[in-house]
Structure formats: C-alpha cells, structure tokens
Length: 352
Image (cartoon, rainbow, N blue to C red; front, side):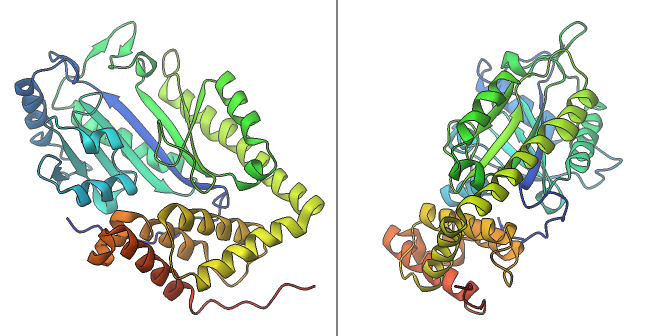
C-alpha cells in the first residue's frame, strides 16, 4: 500500500483557518443487524455485498479496497494519520475493509460502527465538492443494495444521533488565536448549545494537537441534507472563521511581541533542532502556519507546512525512513527531515 504524502495545494478561500472539510454518510444494509450485534458471518456477507457491488456511472472503475485484517500495523496507522479511518476502525479485529477512490478524496469504511461510513475529505473550504462526491457514491451504491430506511425516521443507524439523513458535515479548523486568547472554551460551550461537536486532531476521544480542531454537526434528524449543508457552510463555519480572524487581529494589536516571539521561536527551533517528537513538531509547525496566516512569515508556503505536518507523524516518518520506527531514532529522523525541508527557507530578521 503506497501512501506517499501528496502535498495538496489549498484554495485561498478561508484556507488560513479551514484546513480541510469532510462529509461523512452513515448507512446500514437492510436485513442485517448493526455491526456491533452482527455475527462474523453476517459481517462477511455485508463486506462481500459492498465490495462486489457494481457502481458504474461516476465510479466505472470502482474503488481500491484495502483488507484491514491483512494490513500491517504501520499501514493501518498511515490511514489514521491521513484521517481516512478512525482509530477504532484501525484497531478493530472485526472483518472490515476500506475502499479508496481517486487521490483518496473518497473513502468507504465497511463494518465500522455502521455497515458503511462513506466519507469525502478535501483540502480547504470545498464543502460543496465533498458533499457532491459523497452523495454520488451513496446514490450509486443505493442502486444495487437496500439501505435500512424508515418512512418516519429516515436512514437507521447504530447511534441515534445519526438517524435521519445520516450525514455529518465536518471541518478541520486551525484556531491558534482563540486558544492563545483563552476563547476556545467559550467556543466549545457555544458549539454544544448549537448541537455541534468540537473534537481533537484525530476526532472523537482525541486531544487538539497544534490548535487543530474538528467541528461537526451532532444532529441529523429533522433536516434534509441540503438544509444541513447550507447551515454548516453559510453560518457555522463562516462565524468560526470570523471569530478566529478577529482574535488574531486583537492579539497582534494588543500583544504583538508575544505572538512574534511564539512564531519566531518556533521557526528557529525547527531550523536547528536535532531531536523532535511528533507532538512537539506538530505544535511548532502549527505555529509556523499561524505565522504565515498573520503575515509574520512571508517566504514560506502553507503547502510546505501542510506536507510536513503529515510527514512528521510516526507512520509516515517510518515510511520515509524505516529506522524511524524506533522512538529515539524517530526523533532524530524527524528533526533531520524538518531541517532539510526548511533548509532553503530564509527570511530577514524582524524589525526591532
């Protein structure tokens, strides 16, 4: 399984705050118990029905399927680091598989919490495109298999919060200013009141690393897919983007030396460090991203930082350097990788 980082180019629209977007659709096959209650024989049958289903139309070549039960630990960790599967799915012993579309923009987990978790992840604020891609696969598959559906309740799912349309709209947001200013807890409280979930870097049950947060809707019942999309796209995310940008401006106006110190210390550390842990590197690279967004760093691209954020993760680093699988060698290899990548980055010292 070859998973070299792609280094995608982010669109300009809101990409200073919105790192990526995700549309996830939960579906179950009619006539089968939910994954957690099904027997292995039934799970295998679900697996075969989905992986062998003729799709046609927009997916004439089907998907590339990864047998998760045969994948190595490193291969499964690579998928987690790329946000293509959940940690739970990667560690499960149940019969399961992952289908990947072109350029990994579409992923289908079979036998996760639900029989199917269809998701599209795209860089930047390309929510409409992600929605269209996930929906087209959902519709193509529904032409060949029957989904569990109730006339009153909609699509039936293992978790009650997904019942209805079964769709979750999410965005990975970079919110360093809200964290530095102490406003992030207020955001979390407000999000809860608005039936939104704010989670960490790898989703449910994980911490925010490097001030990256995943925001998604919690309720899918009682609203159409289009209504949920419009609300999330036109109201929820724009408000959070504006909130973060306002916090950045206020920090620069009221405490610019502190922000400059954070950014320039991060830059200096990454350019000279000989040992770097994964979490430390993620936090420092996050600060570089913040420096680019606030105009403090000029000769460094978001694309390079985004690529490094992926490459410094343990499984991706071990793919680039097999010796990095050992923790201490990994810290050495990670520091070397970052120094090499930033070696040609030069910028004059800030004015004093």
